[in-house]
Amino acid sequence: MVVDRGLVQRWSDATFLAQAAPVLALLRTEGADIEGADLRGMGLGLSRGRTGYHDLPLHRRVIRNTDFSLARIESTLFEASIEGSEFVECVLDGVSFSKSNVSRARFDLSSFVACTLNDATFEDVGFARTRFRDRKELGCRALRTRFVRCNWSGSQLKNVELRAAHFIECQFADARWEWCDLRGVKFVGASPSTDQLANCRT
Image (cartoon, helix red, strand yellow):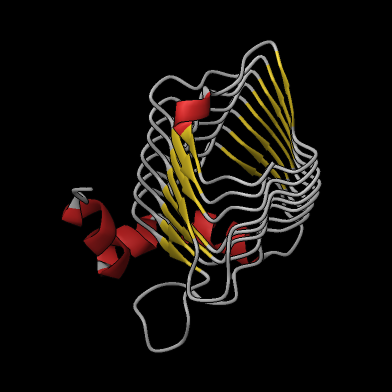
């Protein structure tokens, strides 16, 4: 993944930050709706000592038509309502989407590291060429998650717990899933081929 360094570095530029002050104030307001924001290249919820913005809660919010592309996100997004937003080429590290509703969004070319998607619903969402992977003992989990008309083409999943997840009318062209837990998973309308599921537990 080639990151546009300008989109990342602008978050350290005083002139840009002055222009972005209303958006930053909104992000710091817990529970405030976020709509039409340009957050490309931002660092959200990063650990202390790293360049980025800390303690910006994104959970239990309504997020519409917002662009997070090329961002690094370590914040929580649980119980959020996300619609029409872009997360293209993001790094999502330890992010929880549990019990969130996500529709008409794109995560294409993004990396999910030790993320949790339990009991969430993703509808008309792009996961093309995404990578899901664990971090030591912490794996990605999507237990009882519903994926409706989602595009998984070219996705690479490794050691993901997908128990009791539902995939309804999804696309799986060139997807490769390895060592995933698929017990209780239901595929409706289309499913990956046996060759695409390497060493998965069913």
